[in-house]
Image (tube, rainbow, N blue to C red; front, side):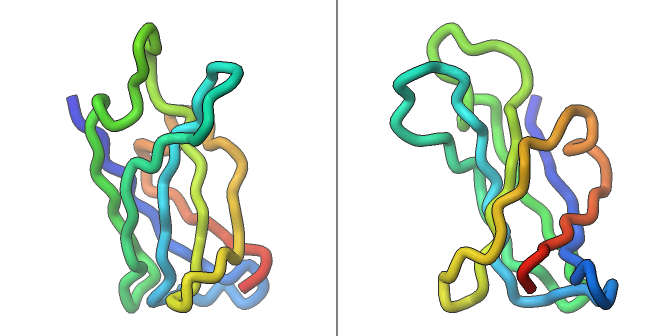
Length: 105
């Protein structure tokens, strides 16, 4: 089974779609002492603000880890500046079309 995230980046104030931003998807590791969460993939938003990230279970599953990933996103401008980090997205929302609204764009 593979996973696919489809989304659209939208300015929360104007409701305009945002292009040329980098969206990175992460799995929050549930184990105490984990050094880093798993980066699952990244995409650049298109002219209509849309993006798509595909990944496999092997990209996030650790030894003894079961279930779906605990997804959250980081949004960067093209200069590489982090502009927003989302909370963990609760299933099944990450399998549906979802708008991610940034508060600092």
